[in-house]
Image (cartoon, rainbow, N blue to C red; front, top):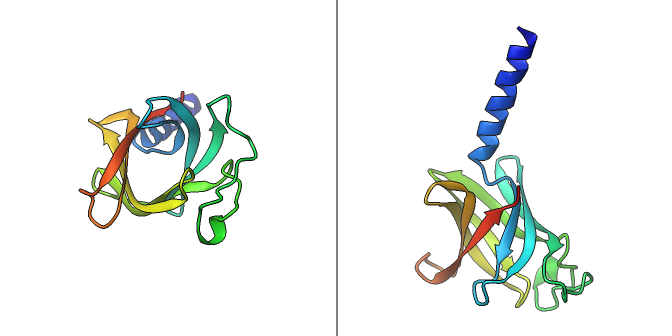
Length: 143
C-alpha cells in the first residue's frame, strides 16, 4: 500500500510540473535561429520568474553585464539575472509580468503559453502596450 501511495504521488507531481513552465528552457535567438542560453523558470508564491543559468554560445563572456539595463539591473551580470518576472496563470497562459532583453536592456510586457499545447515548447511574447505590437520566441524544454 505504501509503494502504491509513492507511485501515485510521483505521478501526480509529474503531471503538475508537466503542465507548468517550471523548469529549464533553451532560448533561441529569433533573428539567427541559434541557441542562445538556458533560462530556469521557477514558481515563487504563484508567480513565475526566469533566470539566465547557462550561456550556449561559445563566444559569450561569462562575466557579461547588462550595461543598457535600467534601475537595479543596470550593470548586473546577465548570468543569474531574472529576465522573466512576475507572470501569473490566467487560463492556458501566464500573463502580467515582464521580460528583459539583456542585449539592449529594454523591458517589455510578457506573456507565455505552451505552443499548440506542447508542454516542451514555450511561446514567449514580449510586447509594448498591446500584445499585437511585439515579437514571439519559441523556447524548448531541456530534459
